[in-house]
Image (tube, rainbow, N blue to C red; front, side):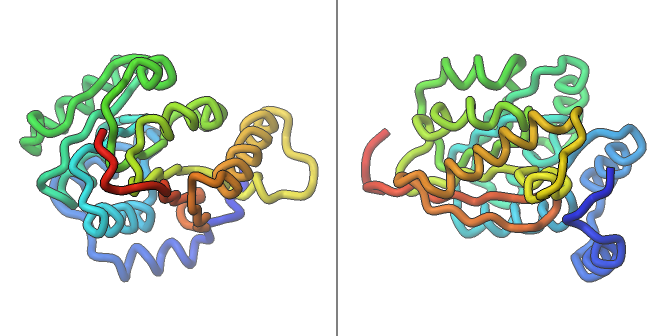
Length: 221
């Protein structure tokens, strides 16, 4: 499927200009590429680091652990951050746990094994930042739980919201991608027009939405 957001020459330029990854993160990206594991693009990872450094979230919730790449990126960006990350695939969670232990973050990153929607329904504590990177077709279902769990002044970051550019495509979307595309369009419309949020949609990586939850930031959780 053609990617209508990213272009090879731009990807190459950004990879050259960004500070290169080293150590475990470099190894994880190579593993993800070789084994077709979806992780955030280098430019998205760079923005995620900046957002975490600026926002300084103490409690982070991530939906979609994969091999633990994004969790480790966020943990490195702010040393006081503690992260709960949800993964449905047991084998993937095992790989992530190994990576987390290798970097020494087992006391800061906790993997919750199970379906993201089911787990989010059961959570009650609030978070300073929520990163959605799980099943794209379910973002709408995650949203109300995410908003319930996100404290006023918190950030909701949603990855893959432009879905290879298909979300903005005016033509016919291939059948196997149609449901996800329709759901993501509705999700974007919701977060861009929800009075509780201020949202920006950024054509970076596979599309990233950054939403700020309005309200009294001094409100206790």
